[in-house]
Image (cartoon, rainbow, N blue to C red; front, side, top):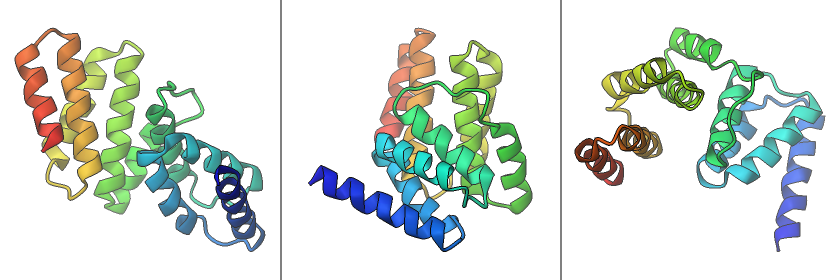
Length: 166
C-alpha cells in the first residue's frame, strides 16, 4: 500500500512537471501534507525541486520551511522567509504572510535570537489571530506555549496550550 502511494505521488509529480503546468495546483496538496504528514511533504518537494517546474519559488520556500519544522529539522540558509513575508504582504495574502512570519519567528528563536523570534510570533498573534486557519492558530499558540514553558512561566504556558486546543 505504501509503495503504491509513493509510486502514485511520483507519477503525478512527473506528469505535472512534464506538462509545464503551474506548480500552484501541486502546492495546495503539498501544503496539506506539510501540516499533516511533513515527511511526505518533504519527499514531494524534493521531487518538485528536481523537475525544475516550480514557478513560485517563494511559496516553495514557505512550504519547505513548514515541512522541515514539521519533522523537527532546523532551517538552513537556503530558505529566505524574510523575502517571502515581504512578497506575501505586497500581494495581500495574509494567510501565507502569517505562516511565513510564524516560521521565521520559530527559526530565529531556535537559533538563539529570542527577542526577534518572540517578536515575530507575537506580531502574528496580534495581527493574524482572526484568520480562519485552525492549523495556523494551533501552531501559533503551541509555539507560544513552548516559549513560555522555556521561560518557566507555567501559567502562560497552560493559557497558550489551552488556546491551541480550542
